[in-house]
Length: 140
Length: 176
Image (cartoon, rainbow over all chains, first blue to last red; front, side):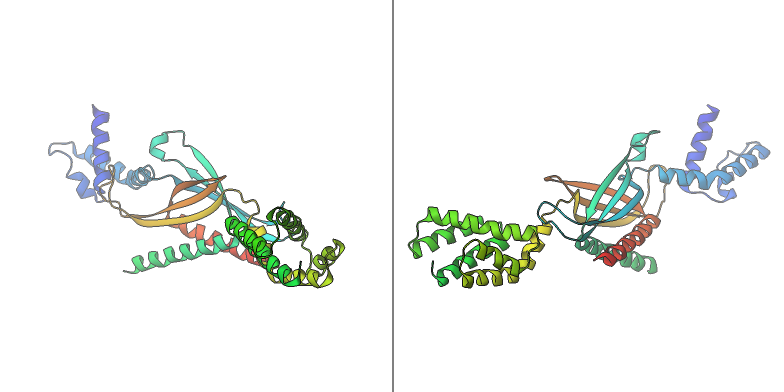
């Protein structure tokens, strides 16, 4: 019962995003032991940002990017042309499925994608537009 | 075959080579040519088939127009016609080369990318969140099918992704 009550208390604090000692102190009932109240508040305050980050990290979300790697190859010949020198890019994205669904065994899949120079240029254009929009939002 | 008929035929051939998907049109043009010049379609088709072998082989081995001309003369074509064909070849070879390179094997080719970003307002654990997320939808061609891949990135991840992609672009440019 004690653990459950503590759990509820901490969840409530994290949920509301309470950061001030006073806010937490007034959650306790009136005849609560003073020193215990202060101790609990101190501990909660120490841990609150860690808990908050963890809650955010384990939110439901679409699959998340965890890592990316790339390499550039030069294609020198194929069955349709015997000699050529075409650079191409291989991009590997490591994607982790929704953390909430996987519990303690996150499933990470690797997706390898090939990009030609034109595709890469178009993609960079799109990414640049995203960056511009992000800075427009940030500057508002 | 007179030289005018030959040039018409060459035109039809090259039009087909530069647009290999237009098979219907090619066949129609061939039968038109046959009826106009009173040649029967069967032997014409055979001749065309053997003629087509020459540009295809030339493309594979990156032959210059000189070499194409020499090949045709070796096969017994008159010099005038061989030169005409070689000229046409010179004009069309960049397009043909580009087509052949385009047909080269690509693994999991990225076809399209869509994105949206927004702000997470709240969740079951945190009442007010206010963090920005970016969602990408990548359309990838696996074999003959298209597959949609959804990925979410945080802002720092997005910036390093952008940075890496710019490095890739510099690398690709230094090789072309």
